[in-house]
Amino acid sequence: MPLSEHEQRLLEQIERALVDDDPKFASSVRTGDRRLKARRKLQLGALLVLVGLAVLVAGPVTGSVLLGVVGFLVAFGGVTLGVLNYRSATGAVEPAGPAGQRGSSAAGRGSRGRGRQPMKNRLEERFRRRYDQ
Image (cartoon, rainbow, N blue to C red; front, side, top):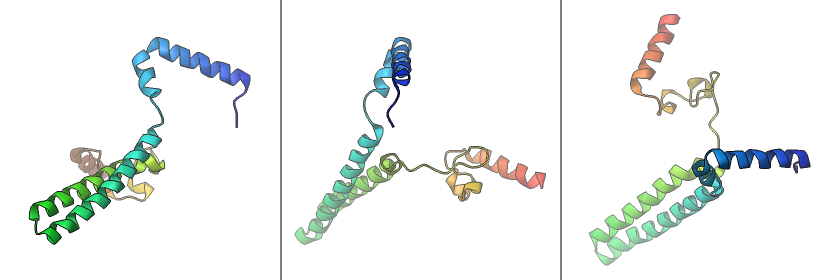
């Protein structure tokens, strides 16, 4: 749905104010679509996996253990690149819990989903829940 003229003018004013207030942030935001960059990295990861598997198979064929290890490392790097960029590339969003926390057990994930939270905080939270019951 296209923006009306009034909305377009307001958006342009906001953009100009942003550039005036913080030009460094404005240039970093304007660099492009993050989803497109993540998709490219995901595709590069898939390509690295294929090349790595080909090199991994070529290692025993040629009798070179080093070539097989290099192939494994390349494939592992491709998988890592793909996993790290999958959520950004597909636009997948983690469901939020009742308090707006990501990865809470109320959202269908166990305690392992809260990997960003320090272990001490998780243990304290678990203790408080048990104590309150």
